[in-house]
Image (cartoon, rainbow, N blue to C red; front, side, top):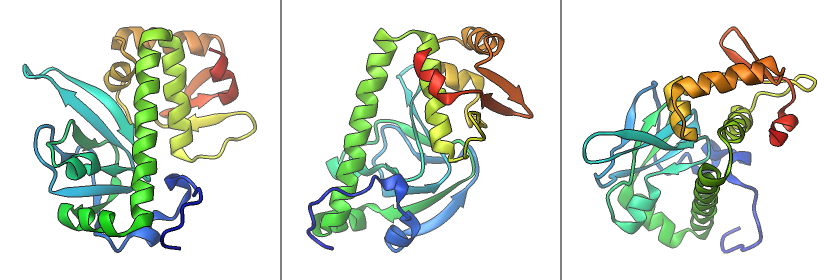
Amino acid sequence: MRGETSPRKLPETLDLQSEFGQLGVIRSYGPGTELLQQGIPADEVYLIHEGAVKLVWAESKGKETIVGLRWRGWFLGAPAVIAARPCSSTGVTLVRSVVERIPAEKFRRRLQNDTELAWRVHQIHSRELQDQANRLGELVCCSARSRLATILKRLITASGIPTVGRNARVRSPLKKKEMAELIGITPEYLSRLFHALKIEGHIHFRDGWIVVSDPEALATL
């Protein structure tokens, strides 16, 4: 109901295609497609219906790092469009993704007049702020092993693949170098961490999948 202020479910629990499919045009993009470009104003806002997108930040000399991942239920480019500022990072699809492209001006008008959409975007941006604060804290205070466990848990949650018994499996959309960037270590050190977790029985690899024997136990690593 319009104007309602009571709490709603988080975006990933909703059928976004039926609720917001009329805002823009829905398209499918293959891996490696650049949706947003750092330093360039966003002409459109992108709503992820399926898939995954990495956010890449680059400094003036060209060195790059991944600063975040975005999944189903996230708007890309909304902060830049709302603030009328260039994009702070480049958005690139990691896997084949279904994305809704919403013209910037149409998005702004709807945001000003549609309280439900405004509330949804506010929820998403609040979650982004929480995630960014958590990631900064983890980089400073938590071990690399703990940060790897956190990434694995997030990948498991985002995949939506049901667990079998106490086992969960995930096929990471990230290359080893990209995963290492996210947790602030080298690819070589990441390999050593994976090997240690495998020896201890926390994970094993099967046909391209990472199988986690007990996702709850990851919280104690």
